[in-house]
Length: 367
Image 1 (cartoon, helix red, strand yellow):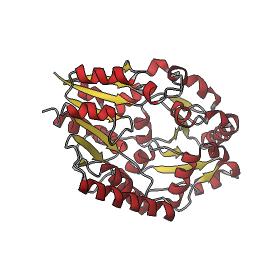
Image 2 (cartoon, one colour; image 1 turned 135 degrees about the vertical axis):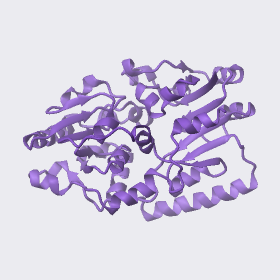
Image 3 (cartoon, helix red, strand yellow; image 1 turned 120 degrees about the vertical axis):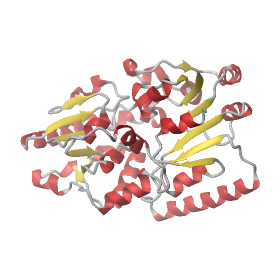
Image 4 (cartoon, helix red, strand yellow; image 1 turned 90 degrees about the horizontal axis):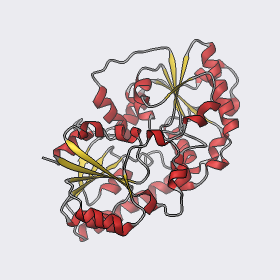
């Protein structure tokens, strides 16, 4: 039996296991998961931040880089999946590459085409610089990347590495379940971004405490109430890393833990603020209600992404601070159009992708 080593930058959850389709890979291979979050974030109490322990997957945790390097040298494995964000020359990669083991990374960035002009120039010069650098210096053939869409941000990350033209995580879910028929039910799927409680936000930015969850939840609850009046069933698709005890503040909805893909697929309307799960709504051609509230300003990166995507979707979104009526809500709903097709081509699937599932791509490197 072959061994796959999975490197993760945070504690690993059941949702992550599903995201990378490790259940499928685990049928033919042994999965090893090394959690290096305590090496990357030495000044944080990881276990205190990531409280949702019942959804955590058992991993080997590392606090010391030397111990990790020692284990990488003595442990036998046949493939590495990199989910740490690490790239380029570093001690961890160097140790793995010395063993002539393939390292696979997935690049699913989406922030170029919607970026504003000064940032586009920055991307352009980055691309030229890295392209020139890679023509001069020799690169490892064991560094492999999945290029998930045809935009320059992803292309920059892929330069100098063996590149497989692929698709987004959302499209990979679609490929796995494309033979399961969808139902068009009169319901609303609200995609929770974990505002106020998302442990990754706290780990990287430390800003959850500034988010006014009481004010935000009041607006979301009002929105749910309005949809309920119209006969819709509201499903709150809880963020998998947020403890469900925190989500009791939301009313007029049914809470769904996991199965996000299923409920988006079978929904009539998808409500979303800042999440890559918009891919699924686009793929299944769902009506989309993009929402904004002033509390989101607590998260500058999310706000920047929201504004950029708003530019792409011609500024069509509902401002929760100014809801006037049901009519006002429905006027702001996006419907399948050429914009959906454009989004799909730019962010969901590379035009030369062969529609091969991630798990099959990984398995091919183990033969």
